[in-house]
Length: 239
Image (tube, rainbow, N blue to C red; front, side, top):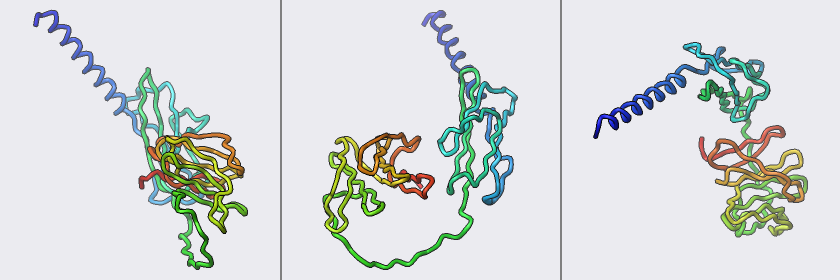
């Protein structure tokens, strides 16, 4: 190897090392801090967060997310949210800090618990109904006088309205062969149905006409789906 080639390799190595150190320094500089930490939060509490800029590098902009949903109209170093507007369970707050074509995302977590203990109900079986074994049921929900059902398997997935007394499908919407359908729920007269690994789900009207589709964010998979009259709750196979 001649001295020119050696010099080029040395300069490239120094440049890459400097670049890596610069990026690492940028990423390590910031942190996200909950400024009012508590062992438990009540419905009347707010959660306050602040981006800590250890070396005062500054930023060009900050984008906030709560549970992967973008917080609109917020671009400052701090964020405050009332907890009574947030769902129960694990809440993930993220701040993506942008500066000179670099970006780093920092996160913080809390768990919002329901104010009352969970009620335990007794079960009484009052009737049984037939069901087609060909239907690989992934989600089902009564709505009015109808039973809506999401069925899975590749090349067999569909959304259907089922006759409870006979188990027969009264109406079907068949999905493409590459889609494995999963959970479903009905909110505000719209039927929401998940796919397993395609990264998105579908929205239908009550007559099973598809009217929209949606991505389910950073989850790798879609499993179960339900709602509480306001929010959709989705499981993805993780805890």
